[in-house]
Length: 148
Image 1 (spheres, rainbow, N blue to C red):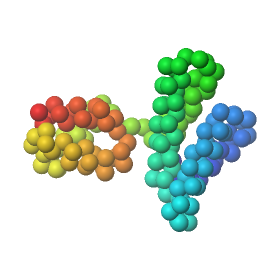
Image 2: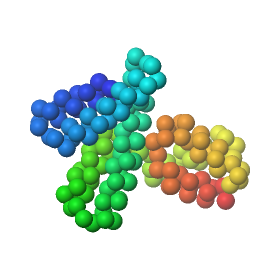
Image 3: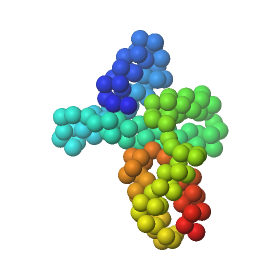
C-alpha cells in the first residue's frame, strides 16, 4: 500500500463514519509522517507505509495478547482484535505454504547454503527478496528441514 492509498483509506473511513478504522489509519499515517520528518525526507515510500503498518500491527497484537491474559476489559480486547483485522487487511498477503517452501528451496540454492550454519544467510536473503513479507517461523522450519 502506498501513501496515496493510505490517505484514500482514511477518507473512506471518514465518509463511512468507521471510528475504529479511522483511528488505526490515523495512527499509521502519523507514524509514517513522523518517520519521514525525522529522516528529513520529502517523499514517502511504499516501504515506509508497510513498515509502519507492520510496527502498528505488532504493537496491537502484543497489546491484544496482554488484554486477553488480563481478561478485565472485554470491550478493549474486541477493539484491539478489530484493529488487528484492519491492519492485516491493509498489508500485502504474506508468502506461506507451497510458495514459501519453493522460495526457501530456491534461496538455499542461490546462496549455496549447505548446513544449518548457513541459516542466517538464507533467512537474510529471504527477507531481502520478499521485503520481510513471509511467515518467518515456517520459513525457518522449511530451511532447517532442507539443511539439517
